[in-house]
Amino acid sequence: MMHDFLQWLPAFAEVMDRRYYTPAWLAGEVWSGRARFWSTERAALVAEIKAYPTGARDLHFLVAAGDLDALIETLRPEAEAWGRSTGCVAALVESRAGWARALAPHGYELHQTTIRKEL
Image (cartoon, rainbow, N blue to C red; front, side, top):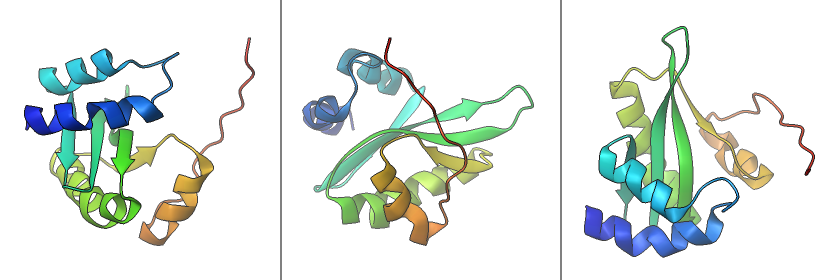
């Protein structure tokens, strides 16, 4: 699994905002078990469990790369099944607006909006 992860790390690095996350941080999250990695020959993603003060837990997608169909049709259901098995009540994606459109047919809907200003 780690060999597969390392093969995908450059693709993950291309889509990560380096002001907030680095490839080394992502690798540490996966290697420590705090995040989980899924892949096919065409796509890969990493997700973590986000815990809230109430005890509720969400499956939080951190990064994805590769073929959109493989991500949505193959890896998303695998990750969601894992999230359900660990007690997650929802899955969340914090990313570009295109993901909202791509995931809408699979039950994802806009939950909150982030308002941001560069300083």
